[in-house]
Image 1 (tube, one colour):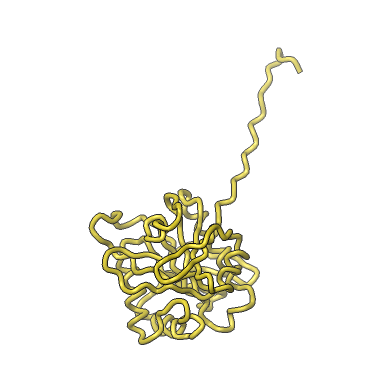
Image 2 (image 1 turned 180 degrees about the vertical axis):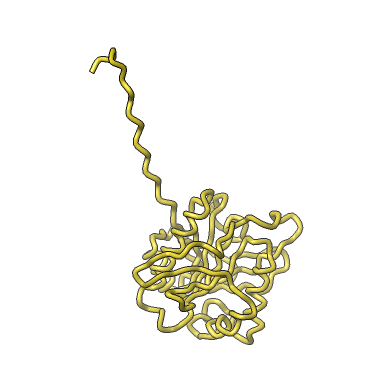
Length: 237
């Protein structure tokens, strides 16, 4: 999700997907200063998964536009993202994030060298979504869609969501949760987030959709063992 004064119409969807942004995240007076809001999430390390080696890379316009526009015009995607139409529709949506202050990072997901997904990683606590749930500082949100039709319906969404959530939590030490808000009608998306270890914590009435708030908490870190106590020869056993 996302948006500040004067955003374009909300795109409420996802397809193993979550929901699309409430708008763009271009900077307005009073917003957080540019830079450093999400680190360099477009260049996270690759992850080895049972489906292959997966990595996120930043969206490159105009090179990626034909592919992204084709995905957005797939009826299964368009039903939730609402970005179907001429390529300019997708270009405006993605370009506004690239030109923004870094609180939303659009990426292409690549599996064994093949582009298979589109992702938006965003600061949920700086997003209008934060008006609808008890946000914590540095909550990081995720939207995604699986592009090629042959990637859907076989569990890949949950696998990749889990990998990305792990990478985000590893890269952002101040982030304690990854959140998502798929449309409640999008059963495949809700199931994919559950498979990735997310909990459905609430249903939210958002502009344009009713959403399932999905939350993945940072796993507790094991407590390191205490150092051995050094005994002096005079100490009793």
